[in-house]
Amino acid sequence: MIEKYLPKTYEGRMAHIAEECAEVIMAYAKMQRFGANHSHPISKERNIDAFHRELKDLKDIIEIFEDNHP
Image 1 (cartoon, helix red, strand yellow):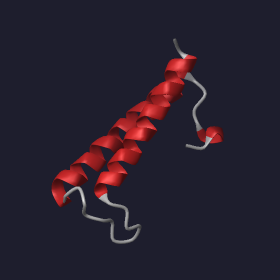
Image 2 (cartoon, rainbow, N blue to C red):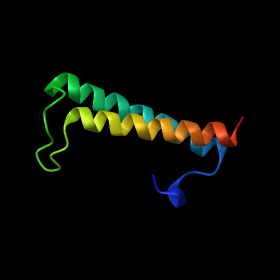
Image 3 (cartoon, rainbow, N blue to C red):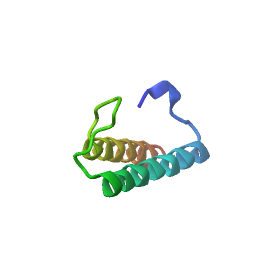
């Protein structure tokens, strides 16, 4: 994630968490539909790797949220 594009408000960070949750769900659904080791035809990223990348993004934004809104 690029720091300058991260939301600064409570509402913005909550919306970002919701967006990242949706991306995790989409990555999981792709794994279920096509298989964990299936690769994207253009990027060549495997579905399992995309899933882990999206999980990391979600964890990162949750950590930012918790650090700023205890």
